[in-house]
Image (cartoon, rainbow over all chains, first blue to last red; front, side, top):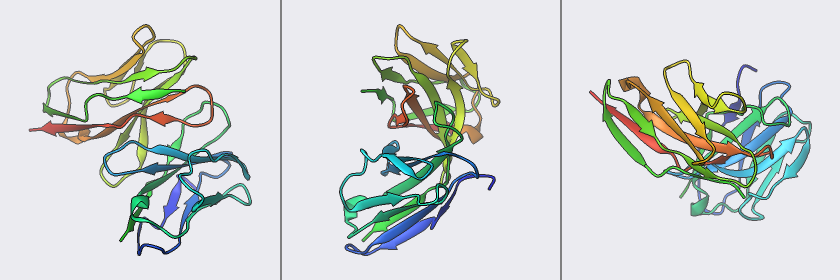
Length: 114
Length: 112
């Protein structure tokens, strides 16, 4: 597609529910990133994929967070047993290669945990 | 480890006035530097980048930034701002590793 597409744009979950956030990167982009942006903060790195391989998951805050990209294109970020502190905007970004190229971001998925 | 500091959380400025948004970074290796802009309810958009070459880089909408290695800075400037420049601005650094590290952002508020 023309840009990075994320869905849903807004998600309200009750504490303890599981959520799944989807990212459709730009077609052909090898690298895919997930970031978490809390209110009033800059984006914080969560995890990175190169094709279908998850090469870095050092930013995932707990084992309740899980990301996958099984066919090297669409990616899903799953959060199990959501907590209030998980409330944030989850940003997905992709780039063409593995080097220091420019990231293209999606509009984000805003998660609110009640 | 790399880090980015944006000291000003908010910068109010009148329309047509000049503005500077400050960014300092720390890294023990060579860096690539970026400024991203985020308009309300939108994703981050690249404003400009420094990868190599000339230390002064410009965007298409009048912003510029200068990479200063000795001061480890990459301040963003515009000589005359417009109402439409109101947004959140994020400085980011990459050392060639995989992920960008972002600053906490500066909210530019342009007043008429």
